[in-house]
Length: 279
Image 1 (tube, rainbow, N blue to C red):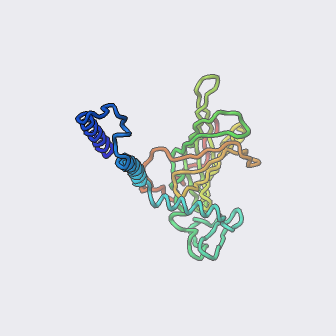
Image 2: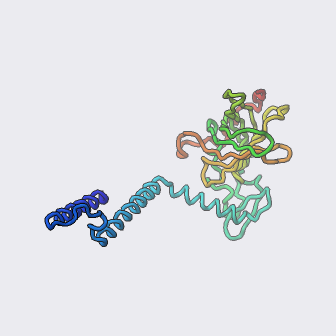
Image 3: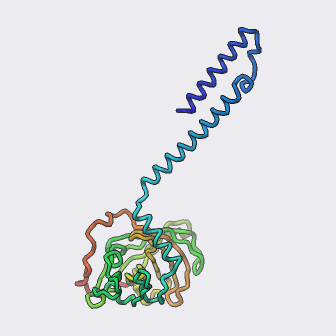
């Protein structure tokens, strides 16, 4: 809007100057730059530049409105924690606070307070939402070793969960791992049945091929390390050596928000342990 007004004013001034020149027998073909007052032209350029900056600010403010402040802060806290480290051994949980107390990850979310501040039983720590049955986590796999493959979409479909009363620090998982591949110019879906568990202490999902004779599919390890329960960093690894073969960042596909009813702590506890392991 401002730009249009300024240009209109400049054109008007140019025409006025041209008419004056014609009336006085001046040069009607005088150059545009020699007719306009240089100070006026400089101010016009400044205003146009300010308009561009204001537009940029408005766009950034609009983008900021779409950011979830709580999610942003949680993400920031997680990143800081990753940089500082937990100062606890590999299989232990940081209770938080200034004392840097550590407890075994087997004691986290087991129904008993083991940290002096009860952080091991906090609702946020013991949230089952990341691996709720029916969830589909998807992302693009980028292979760096083990297999030669172009980048492709991978989906982790949680099909069944179980949390045993006598061992509540883990959720036992059944899932399908699907990959959209292109082989010989044809699009195919490669999939395998997987089993594994979710570790509350480290917010980690670990899946391996459910069929013991399946040695062609690589394990999946996902860390929900973004400060929320809908995004995770995953790696495809060799089960025996934990050697990293591929990386993918996954997100929860369209699903009702976190405020939905969570799974009961003993969801699917009545199911039999057996599962169809064949491909």
